[in-house]
Length: 110
Image 1: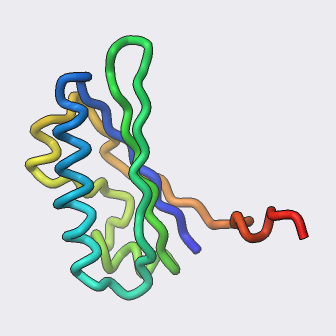
Image 2: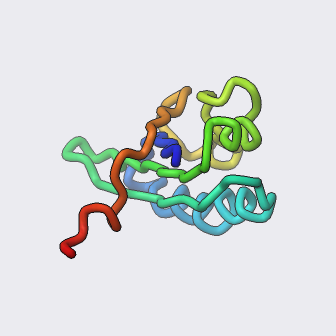
């Protein structure tokens, strides 16, 4: 399993708008593509001491080939639709990809 992690930041004023865009349009549009090897995403949010709000998406894929099926050959490039960009202060231009070594099932008590 490949975990794709990306971060973006908004002002406190834009945080609810960004959350709505991603949760009601961006992630459902990705799911609707019915991509082979895509297993969904988490959307995470945390306020920062300086007043910004940090968001992170954590997406799950079977392989890097499945990630390429999502964004293309340059699989690290961030996928940030225009409506989301409009309310972000800044964002990672590239996503990080990790091989999954343990899952929650692997670390639960027997």
